[in-house]
Amino acid sequence: MQESQDNVRIEYIPPPSEHIEDYGRQVCRRLGEEFAEPEIIHGFTQFVKVAVQIIERRLNGEGFDNASDQG
Image 1 (cartoon, one colour):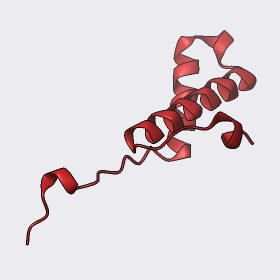
Image 2: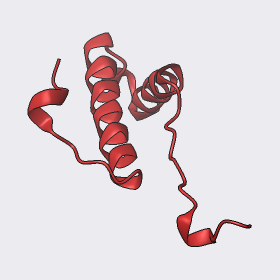
Image 3: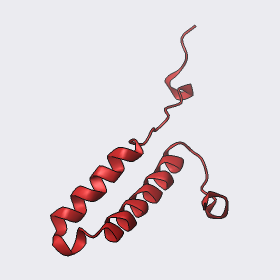
């Protein structure tokens, strides 16, 4: 018996951490020399990782508990 398309679960898998880090470096460098500081790149990359985690959980139907996800 064939499973209905309504019952198929699709799981979103985010890009690997290394890809997000590469993306962060590229974005900051393209913005200009003043954004290429390691602290700025790190901060931006961390922001993108949190955003990706929130989007992943939303797309996968999971909640996001800020208190338990800090660490």
